[in-house]
Image (tube, rainbow, N blue to C red; front, side, top):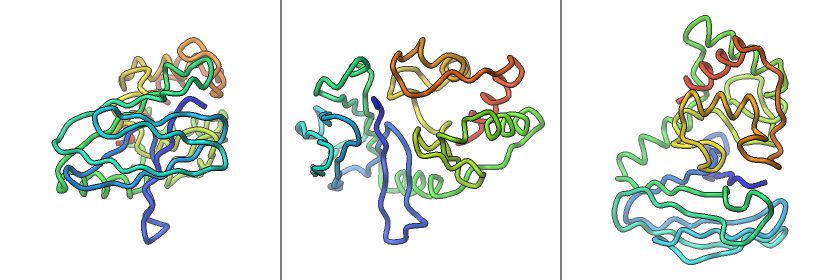
Length: 208
């Protein structure tokens, strides 16, 4: 709860993109957004691009986004949905068709392999300390579906639905104690040594 899963459906299911809390769109082109909720009623609202539309469990709805110029447009859940309602933001990044196609191509790829010893240790810690039970990293055995897909985590601007900037320090704080950052979030605290925490941060920070 309190985050947005973003799926780009393609004609080829193997080319579908799954990310979180950020929507990339090409400037000047209408983008159909299909909305649904798995928990409570939310409200999808990007004020500069479209009106409000409520995702209601079991009742899918649609709206269309059109960005007339490049930019970063902040959206927000506009229906009170619980304790962390204020921290359920969505960001729309409008860019040229060329930039969008390049982003889409990168997102279609599986995660890059660890590039050094610390990243390899971080991948192993991620896979075997419980993280992989909730998160997917395509190209690895991690295939959890409870939390966001992290295949290209480092390409995103922010963490926890725009609660924290995407920096190594913020990522470490989020992993070490998510409840202190976003109380009530479903992500549990994982007991990691300082070395393992730094290694996991290095590994996730390499996933662009």
